[in-house]
Image (cartoon, rainbow, N blue to C red; front, top):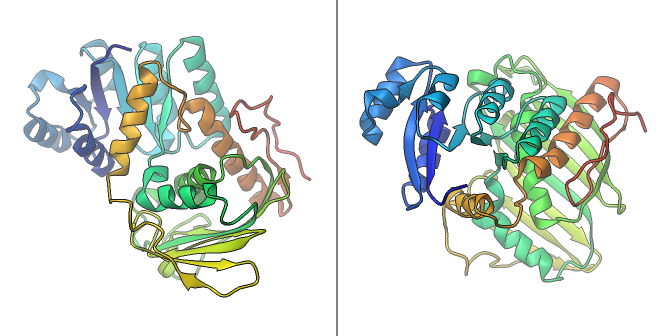
Length: 354
């Protein structure tokens, strides 16, 4: 990968504009083309980013063949990710794909294999782990104050009463929300090895979704750790609580939602009562995308493989695949793979009942 990144952006929605704001401060990035099926979106991008008419495309294949790009940023609905990422890889360009990599585990594995065969560094846009909140939690866990963490409570739900493009999406929570939750979980507990999962999904009477948009689950890990999990898009108010219990004490984090850094933190020593702590006071607020892109650029230029590489992302997607199978079967389902080096063994399809 040359030192200068010349990118094609596919899908000129809010996520692309957020990413471009972070990339504006990077001297190594240049936007050379945009792809969107909406002509108004293309013309707005032309004006906002001072692009020539020749940099506007409605077809990704045409953009790959007619622009000086070496990177493709895919920020479209996840059901389009497989075909668009495959197009980029077959054109010899390096894809960065919005989460989830795809909404199908077998397709994600196929893309990882295709990228490896072409010696291309495929990555997924998992930036949440670089939020001030999760960086602070990771530092606190690493300090040893909790001892060995054995019990996790992860509750994160939103009152999203306009479903937008997820209205008819199958398993919107697991594919679009849980992928972030699991990545953040592995950010502060990187050695967790997923073993099995059982999930129950449901639709509240007020929900505007057509697929289970509220999820309750129990996750088992190979070291004996357990996680009680609640997530969804149809809560009546914002819900966020992360609780980590170790053999030395417990940390409780409560806030509006995972993408808001205003958190209240409490710590209790073993057998003691909670007291407030200023966990993140000394850590300045910063843009998680800026941190993400720094790590991404370093990886493209020969640095260490990041946790958001396509290969690493399979650990998350294998857990989601098993969670979906457990919803269908009403039983614990074994998770294929999940080793901490991110290289999965041969996936088991269908996932096995435990």
